[in-house]
Length: 518
Image (tube, rainbow, N blue to C red; front, top):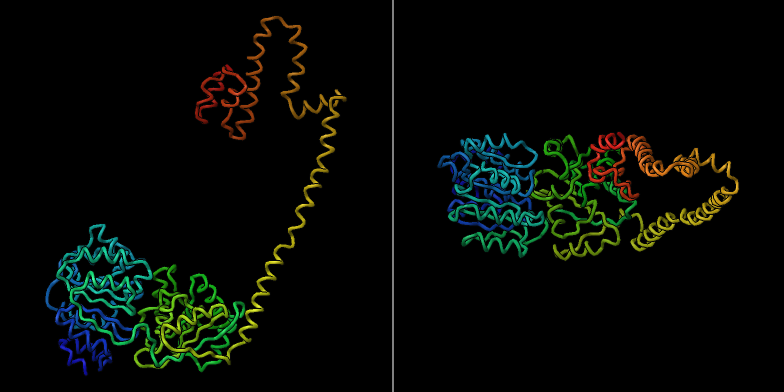
């Protein structure tokens, strides 16, 4: 079958021919005629089978008849990641170059103002990620009641990323009479529930067994230890024929950054791609990888699905994916469009359960690459346990030194207590020390004889004088330390003359003190 047998218009066929495509893939051959008939479609196909063209080509043909209105897009395509959204927009530019269709791309990391300008002019095709689309909707910048064609791409990936609530909300905002095209590589129960709710009598197109891997991909598992993983990866790379380009997958973003630095340190042309990077940096890295400036793309699962990089010769799983479905999508980056590919997975012996889950999902055994194994699996397990144990024991060696410190502290404290006890016997020395260290106590001793000889009126005024002296001393020390508790401290001692100081903010304490002293 040829593209001209699918019912597409002459302008679309011309663009497809100029792009170098002559024969449609199985999903394109089945989905394009049904989409042109305005039927809802449920497409189940593995990555690399041409799903993007199966909905972009009929959409261009349908939207060529009509006109867009401001803030009311005529079609909507939802993608789970920014990279996939940008890739679909490139496909529209390629296949729709002979049509005057307007398009807007709503993704994170890009200015809201630029996106709003395009929406205000009116767009025929709106490509978006769920979060940014809802942001614009809540701002009142986009209306969804004019959408005629709705496409959900990589639905199972949206589920993995937690977009199902957003997806359900968006579906409820769309017109009931829309045409819906729903594509997914797998069909877990949650995705099945969505299709049963939002698709109307869909045509189900399944061109490959669910979660199968391409036959053109040679798959191998290489057992190694955690300490030797980077060395093993470099050894495998050097043992291969010259690698045109390769994607290396890690489970965590921080491991992507660490491996990226390691590869660059050893002279490999590598670049990193993960979700924490700025959108401009991510797109720039992808462009360099596509152009051949970078040979190795080290990525998290944000790049595992849908990225159309046709000539990827190798895929390396630096970490074994904990979900077996992710393995299918990762290695699906190679062996695309009928080409052959190589896939290597570096596994530690304790990760054998994940390898078994992958083999159960794809219903085939993965070859063990014994020529790359540095040691026997059982030996790796034993050595790994010893290494971990050694580090744990080594970390506790300094601990016994702590009990020795407490007796020493007590021994040093005894002479101080003895001197304090002997102080009353030596009155002149004690008086000198108290004068230098505790002026308040010295003042009381000096004042005691005077109180006996003073008249009754002087005794009555003595508490006021003591309070005033304490107040002035507190003010001198409180100004340097910024103390707030002058008023509260006075109350505890029974000096009610301070008055408002107990309930006055700190910045008013100084004026109150001046008033009392006066």
